[in-house]
Image (cartoon, rainbow, N blue to C red; front, side):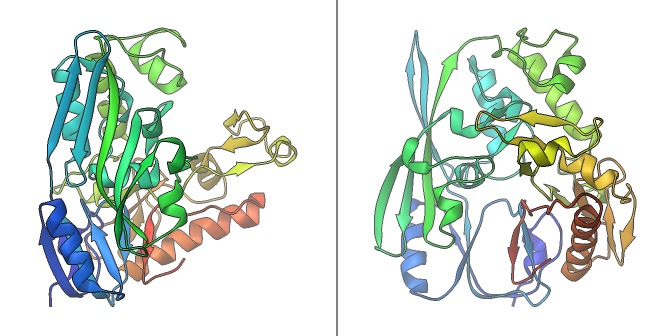
Length: 338
């Protein structure tokens, strides 16, 4: 049996009952139907998952279908239909190289295209839901292909209809609409505007934005590098909590706060962790808080999944005890809890 540590960015995870490698939509569906009602685990890049040390008893399906179809309009831009197994950052880089704009702030996010609508990935002021027009899936419950429009995906902060129904839908392909252009949308994220040397609300070239985002992510250990154990992680382990205005008013003024249109407030999980007594470099067994960013939990080289989960639990409990706010994992937990 093959350990899943070979296929995850944490480099942890026990054996899989069965591993299937698929590269077409037909093969994906055949693998799902072969599994029947038994558990399946869909793995693309393995960059947003923590698998237990006991492994996964069901069928692991590794998707590598990277089909790319593009319909380009000289004026409006391009409609891209991308297979679930395509590497996300390669898609971002290619879109910029071919003269399109929109995806640049999402540069450097690890993983495959199929995961992007599930998590509604986002960074530096933008979310992928802004560019998705439809998502084609296989519905395991009804045993049929179902295509979702953007509104039917029920996107919200780091969530979607697919995430709310775990195990039911397998993403086959995602369609994006992006515009032609050399300039970004207005920069709305303070850290990025500072890095670019532009005012908030100004635009910058998409190549400069991508370069700046990659440098910012790299400085935080948020770019996967097999030679750097400080990047043996799943990126941000926790989501930024969304709390009531009243609860936000009770936090110190120094806490970064982002008001939302529904009256609630998003709070920086990194600030909460760092100000609860958890520090960069803190360790539990072979697991370590990144030396670059407190939101990244890493495998320092000898960690088990239990070590990482224990460190995550410590950080979550410290924040709960200090601020009364419960952090939620952004990472998918397979056979393990925190």
